[in-house]
Every structure is written in structure tokens, then in C-alpha cells.
Image 1: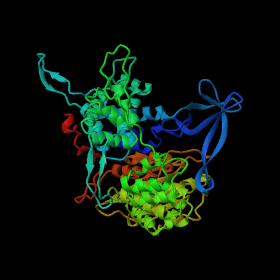
Image 2: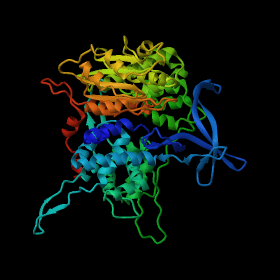
Image 3: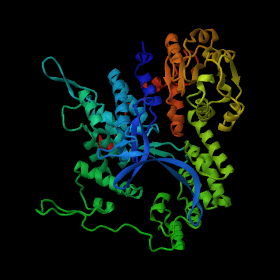
Image 4: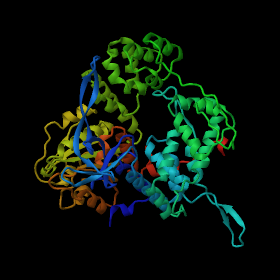
Length: 640
């Protein structure tokens, strides 16, 4: 029996978020090709085509080394273009030998990922309707935006919508639960996160105009429309089911019409055209001309004069094209616009100069996140040598609370800056998973047998990215072939992990039991749950159930980062052992480690999924309990 058959709704949720790694939407064109290692069966690769002698030639776009360009010697990420073939009239990409490689697609939602993610939500819904609604309510406060879009879309169209339930005489006895209200609430709510040491101003969790458009685009996909038909959510064989999307968006637009500051804020943040599209899709009719003038949306009268035209006069968009560098700095000091606005208004002929960037930083135009994103530019402009700018940048590094710094570190030149960014990413990783690792003892067991040749380096890179998340006093690491040995991690950082695994190479046979046995003297405390995390190709013909039982460690769950060996493929020893032990085995897609933002989310989800040992003093809450205790989202009072 497949281990997955034992999964309840909570376990299916965790398996979904651990195996899903690709982006729901790509803002660049790409080639979609078969990939048997992906849960969706395909992969997306950034690809462009050029017209050469009347033929569309496809080039894969890979990141190259950093290089200096222009008179300013600015450092930018170079792109390496590799010819992969040609694109025919049907957008099929063929190699130069004629083999079909995949399909060329413009930017937009990745249909295969959307369909797979939506189907996983449907499976949870089939098991427990209310649990799925609670999952959506819980997910709204998390940072996984793609998953929130998919869950909101599902809740807007699922069939539990408050219909009357009749008694045997045909009279209404009561009303069914309305889970479409949860979907509406996700679109309309604006939840304020309380201030904290890391974020003194607090924050807000909400969907913006672009997310609302993405939900419509998501539900309009033929693949999603078909799933909705199969589930009985839609009776139309032609049109997609949008459920309450239109009604919710009209409420969203109306609220902003009556709160001009919110509408102006959307324009300032670059969402003007998105708001206009929402109004067009829903047929929204504003009450006054102020709505159109704020959006700079000029209205045209139909030839037959069938409607009243509002907002005939439209204010021209602001422009800095005729301003000097000094005038721009004075304007920044006076008006303090956001860095995003500065970037769009600064004339190309001037660009972001040291003076303009310094003025923006000194006047608070860059948030902590903006400062980290702009680090390569700030470094290139020489401003990190300026005491005031360096102090502001250091403060941002301490306050930043996501993994963005790990990505930025790849694009800076200074070793000092690179180490500071990586250190900030390690700290952020620890802080983001601190709550879920309470009461857990983690055993990290790495296969270094001969079958891992060619894959061990990849495995070590993945380990380096996730091990710093765990407190050293709760973490035990081993490597094994036919013999196992414990690895001493002395420093909880990427550099510390790299140092500990220095000299580890592939070789020897495979005995997963050895990896367990050499750690069995580290017993979990009475109030701790144990979880085993395996990294390897499962290349062992027998199970190692007896070794796990004899260790006395009694793991509550297995986590598995499967590594496919180039020569030997992949076995099933870990999964079969978990099945014999009667515990869940959660797989983590190796591609997760290519995305620094996904790493803390994945570790949090895996740790939260580990069942809790039934003890008197429990110091953590499992994912299932967290979701069960989550109240269903309700629409704000103004939209009730």
C-alpha cells in the first residue's frame, strides 16, 4: 500500500507544499519541456527567440558571471545565451536535429503547476470541506502567495455556498455553511500585523489589484475550468466558473472609490492599469468622476450617446524629464517618494546617481527590504563606504526577516558585504523556523555511498542551505556508506556547514542503518519528538526498519530529500521503511533549494507536520492543530 493512502487532510496539505517548488506565474517567456522528476511532469526554462534568416531560433537564457559595463563600470548580472533549436508556427521547440524539446510560451501563469496545485486542494476538500476552508483561512496569514491565490480561487467557486436545506415537507429548515464567504474574505480583508522589534511599524496582509487579476486568470485557465466541471462546481461546458469573484471585486473597487487615499496608494504603487482592468472585467460603474481622474482614465462617449461620461479631464502623469540632478534631489528631500517611484521617474539620461541614491536613503525613501534589494547598486555607487549610509544599511540587515539576502549575496563584489548578506540570511532562516523546531530533535542522515557519485556535491549544497535553521543542541548529523560516522557541526551557519562537510566524497556501499546507528546515543528528551531527515537516492535493496527500532530513537516522521543518482537512478528504501514503521514520510522537492525564499517555508511546514509525542508538557503545536484552531475568515464589516 502506498504510504500516501494513510494521509489525512493535514498530511496531504504538507505533502503538497513540500513537493511544490515551481512558480505559479512566470513574468518572462520560457520553454516548457518534459521533466519526469517533477510532480507536474514538466519544467520551465527561461528562453527567448530571435528571428534569423526568417526562422525563429530559441536561446536558453542562463545567468552568467557578474561584469562591468558602461562608462560608470556598473556591475550587472550577465546572461549566457545557449542555442537550443527552433520554434515552429505552433510554438513547438525543436532541436537542430528535429527532436521535439518542448513548447515556447509567453509570460503568464504556468498551467501545469496551476492544475497540479488546484488538484491537491481539491483532494483535501474531498476529505474534509471545512478543513479545506480552515486551511485557506490559515494560509492567508502566511507568506506563500501562489498558494493563497490558488486557495482563494478554489473557495470562491466550491459548491458550499449557503444554500437552503429543506425538510421533508419542502420548507427551509436552515442554511448550509457558506465557504465562498471565505474566498470573498480573502479578497477583501486587510489584516494588520502588530508591531514587533523587527517591524516597529507593523505590516498588513492583503490581496492587491494584481492578485485579484491573477485569481481571475487562474480560474479562466482551461485546465482549472475542467477540474471545476469534474468536481461539479460548474455546469457550463463553455465558460469558466468564476463564482463570487466578480461580486467580491466590485465590493473591493467600491470601497476604494469611497476611500480616495487607498485608490491613490494603488496608483502610486504602480497598480493603476490593474485597477482599470478590474473595473472593465466586472463592469464596475463609479459614482463620481474622481475615480477616473485619480486613475488618469479618460472616458470616451459611444456614438449613440447611450451613457453619461464621467471624468473627461485627465491630469497628465508626473514627469521628471526636464529636471536636473540637483532638482531631483531637492524634490526627493521635499516629497519623500518611495524608491519604486523614484526609479520610474528618474530620467534615463541621468539614472540613479550617488547623489540621488544618497538623498533617497537619507530621506527614508527605501524600506529595509528596498535597501537589501538595492545592495549591489549601493555598493557599486560607493555609498557603503559612507558612514551614514553604512549605518542605515547595517540596521536594515539586522531588521530584515526573509531570505532575500541569500540571493543578493550572489551579486555583490565585496567579500565583507557578501558575508554580511549570507549571515543575515542565516539569521533570518533561524528566526523564521524557531517556533516550529521547539520540542523537536532532528537527525540529519546523509548518504555518501558510491551511488551518490555526481550527486554528493548537490546534496552538500542543499544541506548547507537548510542545516543553519536548526539549533545545534537539537541537531545531530551523520554520513554513511557501509559505515557511518557523526559529523560535528560547530557553527550554525552556511560557512560552518561547509567546513564540517569538507572532504566528504562519495564511495562505498549503502547501509542506511549505519547512518542511524551512529546517532543512536543522542536520545530525545521525554518531551521531544524525533524526526529523521534523509538525503540520498534510497539506493539500498533492503529496508532498515530493525535498525530504526533498535536505536530507541522512535522517530515520529521521516523527511526525505531525494537525490537521483546519474548512474543508478533512485530506490525506495526510506519510503518502504517508513511504511513498515507506520509513520509518514514527507518528500521535499530538491528544486526547493534553488529558491532561498522557499527554504524556511519548507522547513517550517515539515517540522509542523511531524506528529507530536503525547507528553504532559508539549512546547509546540502541530500543523493539524494549528489549522483546526483557525477560525474561518469573515468579510470585513463594510462588505458583509
